[in-house]
Image (cartoon, rainbow, N blue to C red; front, side, top):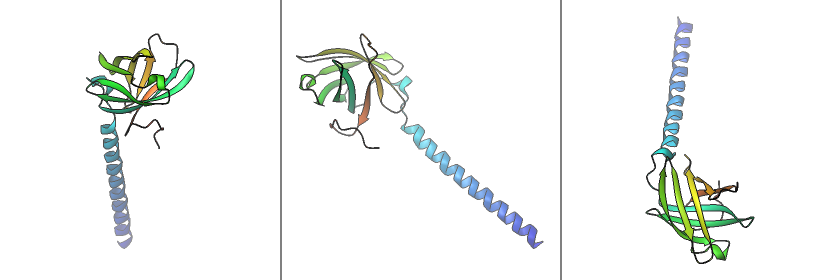
Length: 147
């Protein structure tokens, strides 16, 4: 009788631990799911700063683009000719936005294709196969985000 009681208590303890662990994991999954961006339902580009990696003239360039009310401006860059670029995001659909940047030295038309992580793949018009992206950051730095 005592052995049966011990087995039942052990089984019950295991069951409760499993249920608790599953609930904690489910709660973490829920938080992660909320943090993901639903790009397909986007109506505007999120306000904030994006660290942008572009290829300009065959060289990688870093820019910090500030987005506010679908307007965009370059606030920091490692290339003085790109400083002050301005543009306006236009919704194409399904998380895709068109932006035309310009200043007195440079012009660029781009598609920003947003992902669940809040970043965007950038495609130039015309696309030459460059590896370009925008990643949300907390401030106007051009330093890569620490993981």
